[in-house]
Amino acid sequence: MRNRRDFLKLSLLGSALTSCFTSRTVLAAGQPKSQRPIVVSTWEHGMPANLAAWKVLTENGKSIDAVEAGVRVPEADPDVRTVGIGGYPDRDGNVTLDACIMDSNMNCGSVAYLQNIKHPISVARKVMDETPHVMLVGKGAQEFALQKGYQTENLLTEKSRLEWQEWLKNGQARQQINIENHDTIGMLALDTFGNLSGACTTSGAAYKLPGRVGDSPIIGAGLYVDNEIGAATATGMGELMMKTVGCHLVVELMRQGASPQQACEQAVQRIARKLDGYADYQVGFLALNKQGDYGAYCIQPGFNYAVKSVQTERLINSDNLMETLR
Ligand code: SD4
Image 1 (cartoon, rainbow, N blue to C red):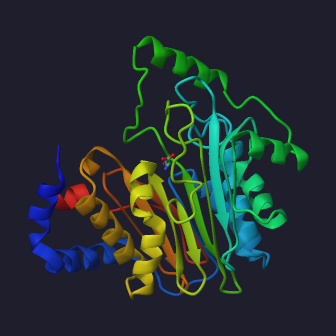
Image 2 (cartoon, rainbow, N blue to C red):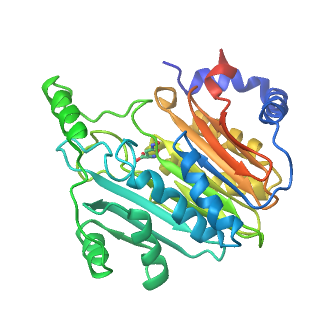
């Protein structure tokens, strides 16, 4: 297992290494500059999600409406096992959902530990638009959703139930957060008016301890938007983003002059420098700036992200820290 000391040793290469792989990864991503509208989102399920957001953006819609429409696609898809209906349950077999949304005016809304409501992102939007609060959790969030006309439904699909029972049988009833079993959707959009928004929604870590809430509904950890600068979202082991307020960090690094790519790399390096045991987990950051430039970086190989603009519609494999340390 790599630890902080290993990383410190390697980071003696210092800024020379950083700028070397920064320029390589920026070139590898090969993104054209200054594009709008544009939408980016985490993982392969970001491809159909981006198309829903794109429809809003190209009809001169606002980025906030685009990101909500976009992430509702995987929320409604039972085959996406990490978001909305069909999401992995917690240790006790309950599907508990976390989501947040943020617009270009620093307005934000969030729900956590929400059960039996398929579209947590739309409940988060209502928290933002229709209450003086930012975050509602648990029973209160569910009651709020019901008041707003949402229906309860069973989100534990038969497939998820059988897998969970298998997991219990195998005596694995412990907190388990590995590299493969959590694929949140985080989406960032820049609209034709030049305004940024973001959304993030997840069922969280598979078989998590009951009551556990990750980074995805926490403004600053799983999502952050500053319309003067840029926006960032995250996927992976939420506790690492929470400890470093990761997405706020990415945006602040962009404020200091980093490109989206550089900011994601520096935020991952911060995690590696500060958090022992980081190498056992995945963290992926995705960022988009006010000019429509984007970038991403992660700890482990395997993270990819979807991009849709006039110029492109594609899935890009993110560069990762582990390969640079080999
Ligand atoms: C969490 N960050 O609950 C979420 C899970 C995730 O990709 O991102 N999956 O920790």
